[in-house]
Length: 315
Image (cartoon, rainbow, N blue to C red; front, side, top):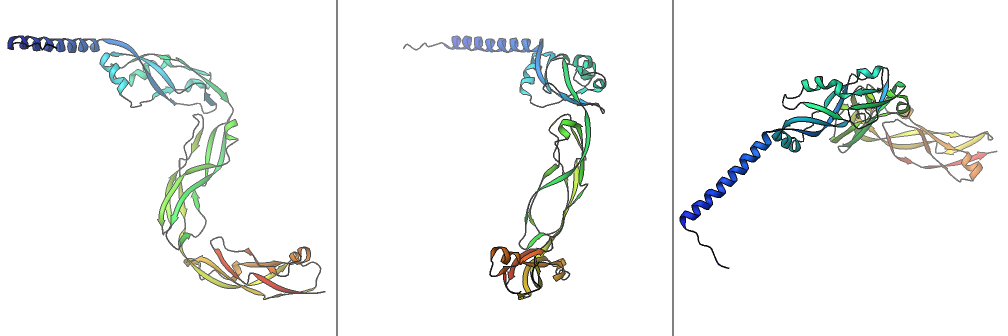
């Protein structure tokens, strides 16, 4: 293929042509984007002044299409800009009707908008709501935890929540199904001391339900644990027919874990060991297994010696 060779003068003319062409295109784009257009953007709605005596449920999405008058530049940037700035919609009129006309609040909405980004209309322009009886209920908070303790450390007592309940408010059909309200997950690692913290409760998922308070104080006692062994007397149960039954031995050694702060005070009065004579009478057991019927909630049984007892029944 033949190569066209241009002289210096011709190259200057071609370069000048393309430069002028680019400048002309840029000038045209600038002129076009400087003109005013009507364009549509999606706007998220945020409800305020909700009715206090009527529970409501929106029958449509909380996002509407808004028509805005603005320059071409603003239209381009609106497509590129992802920041969400919800529009506040006043629901005070729902006290006596079941719908809200967005265009009736345009002046209040536009007062909070830039002068060159005024909204002219909405689609849909009317929001409809379904109503039901409102109910208030107190439900216990369910603490959700994921806690890992240091070696030989563990929870040493009951968890305290302050407050222990939340107040939920909303449609009776929804509130009746709520039995507990979960907290956010309390995640901790290598814990070796008592936990005192503030934790948020999980947010509501329905727009017509409210929960109060939003936070709860959590106290979890934590202590170092060690082993302790006590001799516990064994009690015979379900002896209805025999006047004289002997068990051997009459005490068992119970090894358990206990917190250091309660090591001294934890004695045999905190435990109750039993053997059931019905296991022999009804099932023919030759020895009776020992069952720890009562023990401290903060302790864990490690072993029982012996685990089974001999017995003699005198008829």
